[in-house]
Image (tube, rainbow, N blue to C red; front, side, top):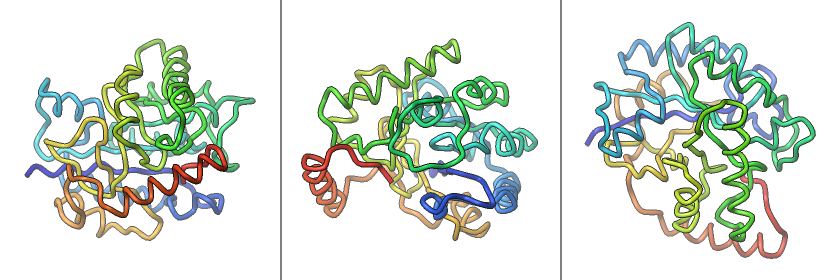
Length: 263
């Protein structure tokens, strides 16, 4: 089976806020990981290219790899984009519009974030831009009207800023369900990435593409293993019983407490 690493990064910083520290890497570590990816000879592509392949519209180069970034932290349109561009590595950035819009609202705890006005800069660096909802909730716990808003509003906001269609989405913390996936398609998205901490493949599901989430404890050796198609399961695969049970618990909790931060 074709094994495609799709990496998920968050903040790239030496001083992350405590709530995102576990999912952050330092600029030095980030540079070493990018160099390791380049050294393996993997061919970097965007999520859009992967989705075209999954739909049978276009082939991928041999041994592809996809780099993705969630939320829209302040480093993204600066040193992070520069590190990628200097190595000719394309990437896909998923932005939480409520967190990057001045005066906006999101469930993300405080952190240095990029701004909506910087979104075109990502495109200038060659990044593909996707949506990551408005407020970063657990999408599979929302009522239908709230779910539609979380999907449709960021798409429209980003399309207005960029001047072109935005067709890719990332589920906050990977949380999704069959109903959420249907709503994503109905909202006009061509794909959605989850987490699953697994390798993707040429037969993965376009509306829950598997990604490998980078934690601060991961090393270059982990990157090299993933680039070699080792060290993680390969999607697609059905949800495990613990995953289904956790979803039911979260839905019950949200019914009592309201929308909860996905993280």
